[in-house]
Length: 260
Image (cartoon, rainbow, N blue to C red; front, side, top):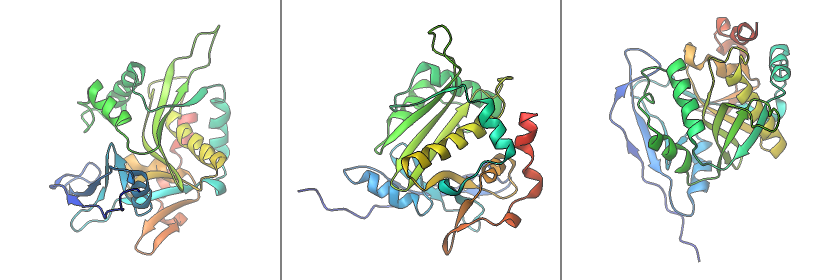
């Protein structure tokens, strides 16, 4: 007989500088994911805006601020626009595979280059190979790594140019962390391609959503998430489709610029 489900204990972190809004402080509420019901708990918390990091589920709980909003793409209703279709065609030759959550040197080297190009001095900049292995392998739920490689030539496996640590939840795929070769001149828009691939992957699995984490209106670092429509936002009344007037208009043409 299995042990009864126990209501989790929640904790709150100390305030620290907000990485998205200058001059503000962030605070998180979190709980541990362990035991035989870890996956069920993660699913339930994911539906109310929590994210997973190793064996912890967390969400923002900032005093006087609710700028971070959970968002998810409705996979079945997503229709790529002209720019996104061009992106799909441009990268249709890539070798894409879902792998067991096992960290490799090749993945870590790609992550280090990605952080140096896109997030120098960020919170993950000091991550070593052991930290990366913990991020990938310390998962109490159904996780996998999707790898994106250049085409195989003469039997030689193509170079790794993108990867995403992903959780498969009961109602969708949750993209925990993605990274890619941001300096690859011949492969623009890799980050966007990874999201589109996850939307297509969720649809093929019969899963309704792709969870993209948090979105902050007006934040350059978050603007890419609103390119995938319809996208739902979690508010006081539950999940609702984000209206067009909620998006800052000048943020949207960036993907077309990347593919020019």
